[in-house]
Image 1 (cartoon, helix red, strand yellow):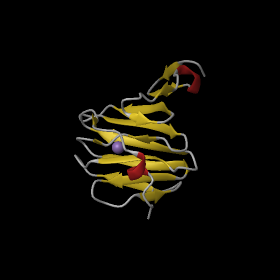
Image 2 (cartoon, rainbow, N blue to C red; image 1 turned 90 degrees about the vertical axis):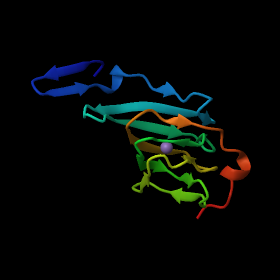
Image 3 (cartoon, rainbow, N blue to C red; image 1 turned 120 degrees about the vertical axis):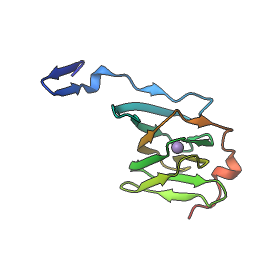
Image 4 (cartoon, rainbow, N blue to C red; image 1 turned 180 degrees about the vertical axis):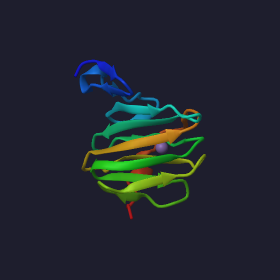
Length: 140
Ligand code: MN
């Protein structure tokens, strides 16, 4: 479907109605593509994105004022909170990140990874990129 159709209380946005967007270089290292899933129209809106990381690609360090939930859909990924080890994540894993916790997430060095990212509250606050020596630390 190429359009958004509203019939009664149900609105369907077709897969062809939205373009994938390229993850900006100031927020990501490597090749990242983002598909919007949708927004929950609550008082404190929740935004859901399907983010695709190619091998080696990852976010910069950042925080979410309202916290974040990541649901790993495909591949093998890496997640790290500041001061903690790098963790490996796989499809079906859910990662909760507390409000204001500095962290990054991305693909493993050898495999792509995609996750659904759900974040509430204000927009993400971006910090510096994750250098290779930090990204390539042994994952637990
Ligand atoms: Mn995050």
